Image (tube, rainbow, N blue to C red; front, side, top):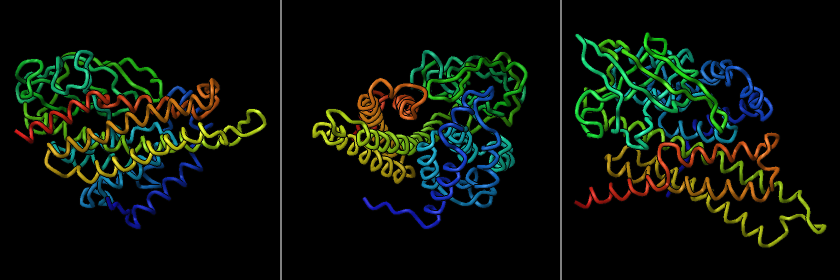
Amino acid sequence: MDFSFTDEQSMLRDTVASYLADHYGFDARKAALKSADGWRPAVWKAFANDLGILGASFPEDQGGLGGDATDVMVVMEEFGKALVVEPYLGTVVIGGGFLQHGAPAGAGELIGKIIAGDATMAFAWAEPQARYNFADLKTTARKQGAGWVLNGGKAVVIGAPWASHLIVTARTGGAQRDLGGVSVFLVDKKAKGVSARDYPTVDGRRASEIVFENVSLGAEALIGAQGEALPLVEQVVDEAIAAVCAEACGVLRRLHEGTLAYTKERKQFGAPIASFQVLQHRMVDMFMQLEQAVSMTFMAHIRLGEAPGERAKAISAAKVQIGRACRFVGQNAIQLHGGMGMTDEMAIGHYFKRATMIENEFGSVDHHLRRYEAASFDQAA
């Protein structure tokens, strides 16, 4: 597979890496996580104004730089290396994806606010009973005049404490698990009837349990076609999974590099443990998992524009490899560091926690194996 980056994408990588090296060190990140907000709005504004990366993947006629999913991949890998917690995935990748593909009223204005760093988004899709089924919805939206009334609740809405807007899946028709009847809405987080309970996640991000109680929405809140939004949700989530895979590559690279450096310093029986053949084999196995993850991530991005069945197979195949690599590389990194690897003072434990969360984000290995199988059977039928 030939995957070459353009000069502009290489410059983008260098720019993001340089900024993060200067402003997103391990100690600065820890301090931000322990703050009341849990993130740094000033860094978010710098992403918009100093780096311009919030608009890198948007078309030029919308105020962006005319990039594509590969630009997102470059940014997300660098974010993975620095364990960035700011809501780029939820805002630019997911929020921007729904606004571009669903084209709701006022999308252009809101995209402009995203690019300027004035709007942040969170994707409220998960419900306790649903697992990874986007069609399993108890949240409902019923017609009221020209608009809608939203009721229900969403669990583990990543980035919601920082969000100005929520993208919410709700059922507007059909039974609880029907493929039809799924709709998507854009909700102002400050709207009357929206309540949230915020909390930190194990990997340093923030999330919310959100309840919608008779939330009135205008007709313009609907994203995409009424009751036919499931394909739109799957498309945007596949783009998000590809981005998370790129982030995982950055995380895995730091896990491998940090473990390799540690084994060269740590001595047993008067020699660095990196000189022990069995540990050399272990480090090679970790490196192979990393390289396979990178290759599968490239493949996933190449096939994002293909037909839904082919796209689903490519994304699920990549997520399976990423999930396996996160577990293997992460657990071996901790084992080779010993118990101190999980202490708060060592960066390796923070990378392990993020890798563990990525393993199950938008679907576990088992889920994506089943999805790959289903997509293959559908094509063969």
